[in-house]
Length: 242
Image (cartoon, rainbow, N blue to C red; front, side, top):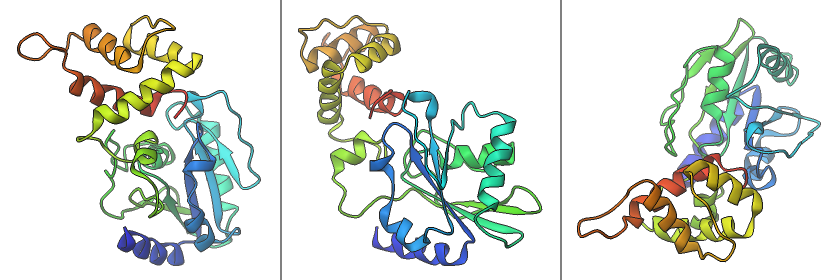
């Protein structure tokens, strides 16, 4: 991780614009204060992505809220214009930074009108730096996902920043507990997995409901809760709250 931050510092120094992508469901806790300090307020532009997953409205003086998945051509042009406002240099080089899975590659693909950057539901997909021509005035690059060195594993899992192969049940149960405490998450889970959650159920019973609905069993007839946990933690990335 120290090397990642060192490499990022070099790229930030070379870039004309720093486009920080954050999650609309948790703007404050998906920002990168260290990267922002490295960038300086003049070059920094914050893109609040995944607006389709929340009703929260975030207005930033040096930012824009959108959904890369559903953005219009007008929003695309607006974003390009706002990025170019951060510098007088042409062609300008914009470096995209942010946590894994906040949608950096998806926004670059929106800007390029094609799959210029690889997109996958796996944290850490972007391995190498690649510069992409958006127009005669703008070039962009997608740096691999990064997070504060001291961040706890459970917080990274909640934000979808790391993939869980081990301990998936632990984090799935934690999320299931949050589902039981939130009417919004309950409604989402019922629709996502086609289940009915009762108010007095426990977190582990939510996993059982999903396993039964998905017909997930192990040899001998027991429920496959490990696979169910992985399914739930992957689905967390599209939940209305994280």
